[in-house]
Image 1 (cartoon, rainbow, N blue to C red):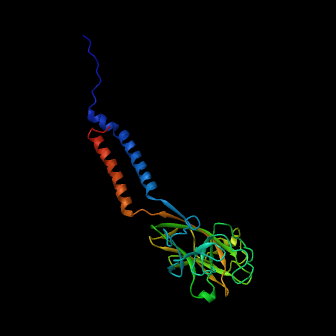
Image 2 (cartoon, rainbow, N blue to C red):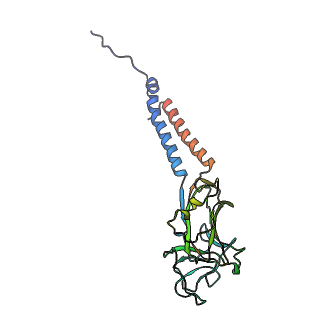
Image 3 (cartoon, rainbow, N blue to C red):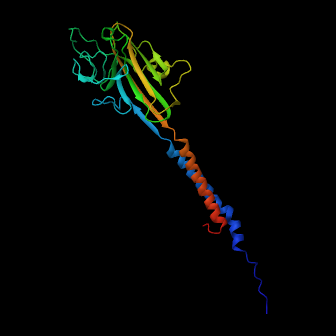
Length: 273
């Protein structure tokens, strides 16, 4: 009788050990995927716009507030030319509005000059005139960061309607730190490079990658450079990238590592798929 040659049997344990690297590789891939997903969902970018977020009904509203010094303006009313906005003076002095420019004849019987650069729907800020306290009371807009993160700011300010004998200055600060300012906007159009915040930075300051804490305040403020104030147009956009809590990231990472080692233990025990 012929003897049948049978290959030496290979133990299940041996197969398990040999296949272990092949089985661990998918686990590593899963770990890398989980880490990538964790990072991608942990950070979020929140966008804000002074123009698009405007409110006629509430002040403050969300992170925005329209103020005289540190006090939100509580009166929303129509001014002499029919446009409503936030302000206490019927003449519109010291107001902030989103709407149309004054035309015709003012309450004193003087013809209103043509606007320099004022489109319907623009946000305009009228610097408070000296007779109404403009030497110590300043119109401003604040944005309060709802989260901790990294902030990017863009924007511009220009001459909306400023008569030849008047002028307006502006400043931009983050957390009380002045980052940009301009002493005159008379004759500026929104399309001019000099209107851009980025072209009016103070030395050593930046508008991008600014670390902010929850509750930190960004302020844009106007002040008259002359006896009487006038209208300055402004656009401000902010984007804050949220920073996840370190403890959350660590826990998620450890969970991913735990999944990897559990997979390896199952493979070593012969129960891995």
